[in-house]
Structure formats: structure tokens, C-alpha cells
Length: 220
Image (cartoon, rainbow, N blue to C red):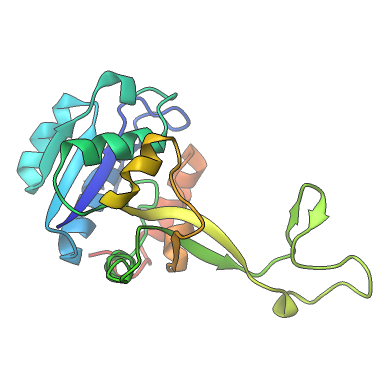
């Protein structure tokens, strides 16, 4: 069984109540739920939240509702704790985190991510975008050399940047999750469209995403 989990924390810090904000006629949460349902990739779709008032939305949209403990609703709660708790309280072999922070990700992105999870040795996965720019980490070049001329961007090796729009775990990851490890070297990296890379973290992000939503494809 493939379960879609849509986590919603009532007290988001950087952008207050971001999941309750509207892009057009729907809230960010409703947009995410709509895409998860329209993808037809899941046996169940569940709102995972600390806000009991969202149960009404779950009933109206036609998804399940899970009220997690208050300890998992603070800014100190980690993703591995949230995922472990969900797996511990729900049946199903795989759980997929469809992230409301990527409200422009396409329905095709969701479908493709779940399709990749059918691989025989799949245990976890995370979505990413490719970036072909000069990158530095700890003051050292990652994909270029300062000497012998400055490389053209088209000649650079791509950098894989996680966008977190889709994440997933099989039940065999329970032991690792219980120890605080979310992913490992065997995690599948699944490329997604550029639309998944627009992350909703601030008021400025919201303004940009709202404008782009008018031209973004495959939004349902």
C-alpha cells in the first residue's frame, strides 16, 4: 500500500500559517491535496497535523486525518521523528511525503516519483533539480577550477539540489528513522521539473509563486 502523507504544522515559523494562505481560490494545503488525489498514485492520502480544525478540510476533500502529538508539532521536531511516528501508527509498505512547501510541483512529478519507488531495491527517495552554475562549498569550488580560464556554464558538471517536493520511505527504514537518520547512501534521487524548485518559505516566495501559478503547467 502506498500512503501519501501531507504534513501541516499549525505554527510555521518563517511564514506564518503558510499552509492556510490562498493561491487563487485554494489554500496551499488544498492545492497539495488536490494534486495528490489527481495523481492517482496513492491508496490513501492523509493530512498529518497538530491542528484539529483541519479534520473538516479532510472530510470535505475526501482524505484521511491524523492528529499527531504536540511534541511533534514544535520547531524542534525533526522530519525523521515525524515520519517514524506516522509509519508507527499506519499500515502500508511505503509512505510518501508530498510537501506543501512546493506548491507548483506538477502532477507528473508526483506520479514519476511514486513510479520510481517500484524499483526492487528502493528503500527511500528524495526529489531534486539539476543546476548548472559555478558552485562553492566551504570556500572551495565544487565543479570548476579557478585556474586555466573560467569555465563556461554549459561546460560545467551539474549540481543536484534537493527540493524536498517529494520524499518517500519504505517500512524497512523504520530502524534507521528511529535512530534519527532520514536518508542514506542508497536513497534514490529522483529528478523533478523546475516547478518543484520554487519553495515557499517567505512572503516574497509567496508573491513569486502566486504570479507563476498563472503559467505553471500540469497543476490540475
